[in-house]
Length: 293
Image 1 (tube, rainbow, N blue to C red):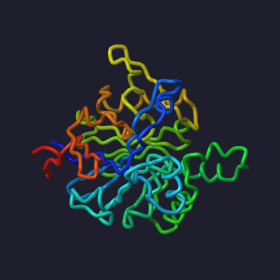
Image 2 (cartoon, rainbow, N blue to C red):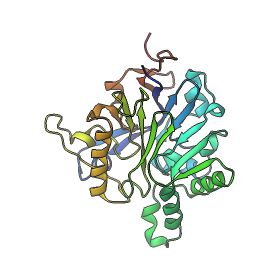
Image 3 (spheres, one colour):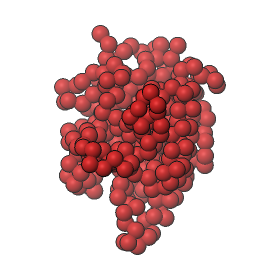
Image 4 (cartoon, rainbow, N blue to C red):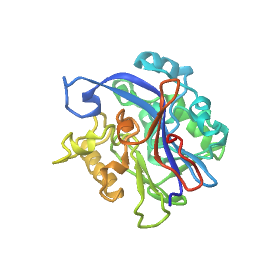
């Protein structure tokens, strides 16, 4: 019995990124594809997303050009196979505030957003630093931070101070402070609704990028190999990765890195005519498969 249907939805991709950005210290080991995705969670009476991707206007249009991001598609197009419109999304769980995770705030006009208070306040503090510290702002669109504050004013942003269990039934938001970012969090889905679930999925945000971050590329003798970007501590990031696996009852395959190009090798997948993929992790009892005939 599954309470939520869970699908990874690609909305664009970076055709090449150095492996060293995805696996810390692995310089001169080639390039990899980096999909950009958000995650759709559908329950019997709820529609939620993990992250909202980014838009293709204002500063983000420049980001798309500068980073050579390709095949960007609107939420209308990405959600249309499910018969869902952006206006139908009720809840959005923001793992962190980088442009490709929080840049689409304005694209979901009826959603309520959830983020760690430390994530937002730390970016506001970082914005006050002088230009010598501008590396820290490399993945942020400052207008996203301002939009988030406006959402708070309008009653559509909930700032969390730590762990929040059952934010929706069976869905927990867990912080990983001072790791990839100051207030990163991950999403635990207990898909049978039980406190001690035997059907748990963990949406990792950017605490990991690839399967290799959890096994070091050695499935027989796995070790934690951190991603290449940590505004916080790599040590804290490694321990957070362990917490991800523990939250999934020790099953690394249940910890989902949405940037992983090889998800389609592990889970049922459907490729749309626009070349982007829908990856199916779970199908609720009230829904039908989106990828299986």
